[in-house]
Image 1: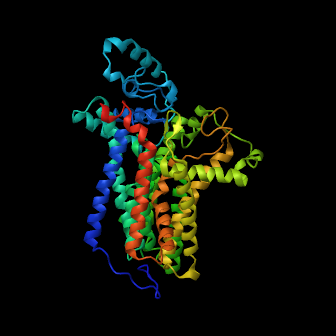
Image 2 (image 1 turned 90 degrees about the vertical axis):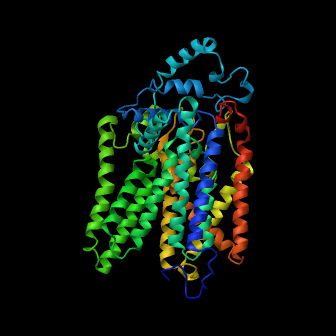
Image 3 (image 1 turned 90 degrees about the horizontal axis):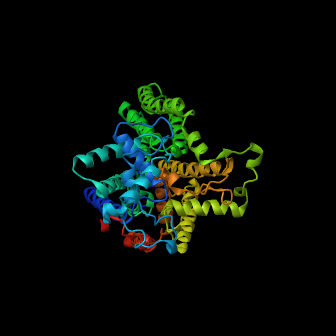
Length: 508
């Protein structure tokens, strides 16, 4: 049972040896990096998902400066914003032509110098509303900025150097997906290789941008792997406790929207404590619990104290909400939200699921999306997650107790992330905000729940495995290959106009 097979389920033959699996996953990691690097190079700077603000924070952290308020954009970041920023994201195609708006770096300085100075003066007055974001991603990108400078990179190539960091993030994500799938389903080659394969080609545009959302799935992916080890250990060790705590702290210090995942993780730790009490192993596990608590709690408390001292609230989110003009509605008005109606709930679920797969980048003020592809992702996600949940029922005897426990934790992570964004949709009055807005009062921003990417894909692939249960393993891999081909072709088709931008890396 503990190895993931029941007494009535035959052990499938091994398709690849352990060393072959590692080589395949290593190759998938390299492919994932190339996939991210290619699309990162295709997109010009700076996209509509606040990329200027995230870049500005990377520059500030590279200088050892951690913002203490919602400061204006750094004078060292402004030249990059005005020279390499493209209007193609937010300007309608009918109003944009490359003749009218040529890339500034291709023009003689004596011709555009005065215009650039005027733009620089204007940008130096812009407030960076992301200044209260947790520090981990910006510390990493700040260090990368300094390293790129030391290597002699400059101008636009130095900008793309920061984006290309995401290639390493996704390559690491591929390995984590394999590690957790192998831990939960050691005898299922389809799941062990399917999860890293989908991660390698996952079409989320946040991975092609300078933004802290890109780090969330790696941070929580590491925490999730360690939580699985924690739950499975008879007596967790001090090292495991410390590593788990640090990974949870990293998740928190990456993005505040990861808090629902931390709540589920905390519940999982308490669940383990309860089992340790029943088994009489609580005393022996005391040092591990202490190391987990200290390594998770101290960094979190330190950042909460920093935000309270400098931004006036524990997370700094209040300053951001105030800047955006968001206010909390009276409790009595929460229940009038359209999310409590079937059409409103569907609007929320559809929008959130679609952007979770593809991202939120606009091109000439139009989402880079294909409606039929969005429908496929949404419907397949709902069906396969539901199939996974039904298959987990003990009466079907399709999974061991350990596997049911692990997949239940996956579902709780996804459900917590969705519920959190639904809650934010309900409580805020969005006033003049653009997205969300009073007309569309939904936090359908899929990147905010990217921390749950590995748990989601475990559910998705497990559901697909159950749907294809009567097929041979070779047929299952063929379906997986077709799914990946569909993901890649549809992503290229949706993003096709971007490849021809005169502002991207290929035209520098």
